Image 1 (tube, rainbow, N blue to C red):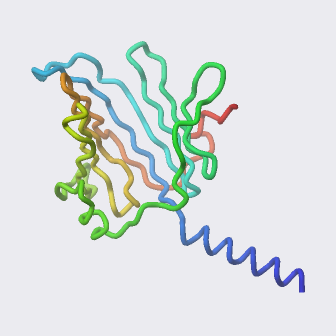
Image 2 (image 1 turned 180 degrees about the vertical axis):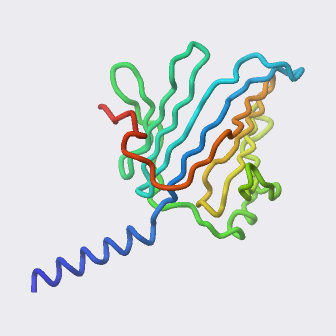
Length: 183
């Protein structure tokens, strides 16, 4: 009886996990900052985000000084920024992937239009308020549960563009997760 119950719980958990799989995708960007007149003031620098079907991801952005700004997402634990002296928690993690239903994305109040980036159909969402000084155009791929493909960050005095240079679908190698959570 106990074995049957354990098998039932295990099957339910496996079904829940399978039904809530995240898409495995790696996106590599160049990041360029432009001043108000359109002149390059920083970059291009390199950045990437590697994501697995478990919901675990890491995003690394090369900084102006050549160091790296690193964020890690560990399912059930949160999103952490790497920092000297220990990692700092910056937000919660998603417990399930965002919908892959195009109507969900098109019905968001931030929805602007459909577009295509590197052959991948995306929706463009405008996030933020102009009165707050920062607007972010997010180019997200509904077919991949809203994966970020491109971003354009509009500040009052500059523009930062995350332009994709490669998109790789499929489960990343464990070696692609170069950074471990340390607390």
